[in-house]
Amino acid sequence: MIDAHVHAWPRWPYPVSRLDGDDDATVSRLIRHLDEEGIDACWLIAADLADADGDEGDNAYAALARSEHPSRISLFVDVDSRWSSDHHRAGAPERLRARLDRHPEAAGVAHYLASDDDRWLESGEAARWLREMADRGLVLSLAAGPNWYLSIAAAAHAVPGLPVVLHHLAGVAHEEDLTRLAALADVPNVHVKLSGAHYLDARVGTTAAVDRLLDVFGVDRMVWGSDFPVDGKYVAPREARAMRELLLRGLSPSERDRVTHANAARLTLTSR
View 1 (cartoon, one colour):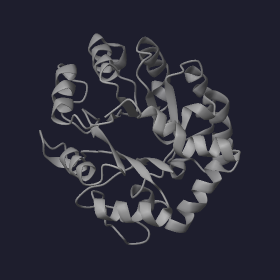
View 2: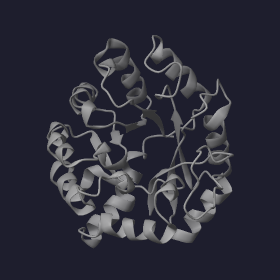
View 3: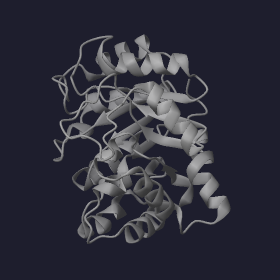
């Protein structure tokens, strides 16, 4: 199995603890988790919540983790996410190039958008930013909600060589969001992570959300992720395992293998 959405920090970065009281967010704890769950490898999504500069912060920590566990970890460096003072400011392509030059081992880029679409993805800078990733054979791991679907569809369509993988059920939270997913159906390089079901409104239902995502994306545009260790703020370890099974329950054995392994492996095959 490949877990396409995990995090690690030297210290637990949230004011709210995990339900099990184990706020160890270190790489050593992540590796133990992978071993305990029988997971072969992971996408480590850096999230530099402190907006550290240069080679400091979570990007450096995640890069060190990748160097220590190269067969287990694919690195996704955080670039200009919503908590950054550089978020969608001029010079984004240059900052991206500098970050990737510092981390040539990266398999992809992580980017977290704000809740409202600021139209930045429609800009010339964004087009150059996305093409830089495509030219390097990387994957964009993108946190975005339904307000962004139209802009994401247009931007991804313009750079068909860049795989864009949306976090956490494509940010679906409410029932009305399921209809809006149609905007992404015909953009083959947009994929979705079966992860983050703990963020769903209880009135939606995990099964209904997954069924709709299957209709829109199909099995070959899906990967599975746990959101470890952040998921522990919302669910206990036993509940997390049950949630994984619920997300994958409707899949045949071959489909399950594609979602939990083959698709993620294929997406990062050409990256470093």
